Structure formats: C-alpha cells, structure tokens
Image (cartoon, rainbow, N blue to C red; front, side):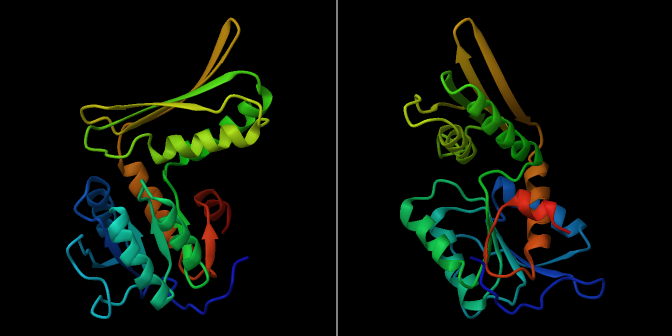
Length: 241
C-alpha cells in the first residue's frame, strides 16, 4: 500500500525538476541526458558515474533516473531513501537481494522500475497476456536480440514478457522459453511466438532508436515527482493526469 511522504518538488514554469542521472555515460544515459537538456521541465543537476560517491555531498535533486549497473543502483537506493526522493530505474540483471532492497525502499521512495520504457512494449505486454490466456496449450518462445554490448541475457524485457505468459496460463502449461542474440548495434527486438499444431502466432516489437526508452524514462520521472511513496508502473502513470 502506498504510504504518504511529504513532497513539494513538482515542477512549475519557474522551477524545473532537478534531475540526478546515474549511468549518464552509457548508451541509454547519453540519450536521456540529451533529451533532458532539451526538455524545459528538467534541470540536470548531477550525472555521477560508477566511481563517484553518492551521499551527503550529492547535490539536491527532485528525482533520480538510473540506467547504470546493480552496484551503482544499490548506492542510489540508499540516497533516495534517505532524502525521500523518487527513483526511476531501468537497470537490469538484478539479483534477489537488489530487488528486495528496491521493494524495501518504497516506504519512503516513489519507485518506477521497468525493464523497458517503450510505450509499444507496454502494449505488447497486454497483448501477450491476452494471447497466452486464449492459447494455454500452445508452446511459447521468446526470442530477443540486442547490441553486442548488452551483458544480461535474456533481457529484462524478455523475462517480464515470460512472466506475463506463465501467469496467464495454468501451472501445467510448459513455461515460456528464451533465446538471446547479441550482435552489432541492434537497439532491441522482442518476438513472442506461440506455436500450436499446424500454425504459429508471432507478436513482435522492434526498437529502431533508443530515444524511445529515454523519452519514456523522462516521462515517468516527470509524472512520479510529488507522488506518494510506493511502486508505480509506467502504464499506470501514463493513464493518470
């Protein structure tokens, strides 16, 4: 249940949102920084990297966005919790301990944690749930492709889609399987295929520009500022005024 934490850090025409960006030197971080500099709603106040300490000397900020790595995210969770500031994270490859730390922080932190900030992927997730429920006896395979620099496999998005498939079907159904490719500069492609006797159904999302993820993360940051502590989904924030 979302618990109230006093916050008065919504942006206004006179006071843009102070943004802390962790992971600003990575592919996604650079895209977010570029868009934030062009967005009048935001003021980029700090872009610490993995070697910078996060603590009392970190500048004041209204919301943090994280696209770094699990170790960096751990430090940022503590900082956001101590200051009761919202956190938007797209870091993947989390272990159970890190996931538990995120959940535990939601007593003081308004948290948005997504493996993918694309609006198209949000729609894909809804479609996957519907198809999986309608075809419980069909095999489901999730094939994902990304650039060769992406370390975690399967991707966080693929795993999230697989969880939707498995949750929509009886426990006796074969769990979703995964296949991963890391090659070239592929931004991101996810195919969810359902195979039955004599037929196959495919649902596909292809990202051609990672700015879609950056734009989604910034939109999440703008909308979560001033919210009560708790966990929020991107689709939930987009549906609210």
